[in-house]
Length: 216
Image (cartoon, rainbow, N blue to C red):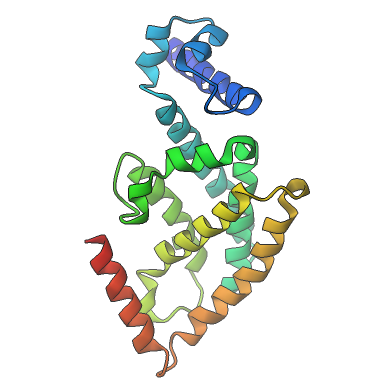
């Protein structure tokens, strides 16, 4: 993509974000985005086939922003609880511009079928990038070997639960979501630690097996 095309694509994306925030996702149309951006409707469709594709690109950008912020925050944090807390807060920070249309944003970036198969569909690459953030989170921490390969995805799924809470959080600056993160991160870290206990490990292994069967 040459410089002019990249500039036009960025313009369409920025215009869409502004209109989603001011008019809402449902009332925004591709034609309206094209008009506001000063380009033809055909040109808008050349870069993005639909509003959902625009939202998916915004989601990809939020994941990239989360990873940059999380990487910086993780540099001086040790222990799973503190590292997880940093990554979760970085994610909510990155999502902040989309809160006004959070439901549509998450629904388009993570369609219903992703609940069955978190790595299926058009947004699989973005989700893999997001899961990669949680691979960084557990690096250098004490995680039971049998759980290490699966834990980044499990932490990402926990993060998706936080995001769902964030979508409906109307407190100022989503204060309740921040409180949830501060409480949930240490709890999740304790659960990971407990998973190595002989009485708990078989239950965790059974849950992982069930997850694998559901996703197959």
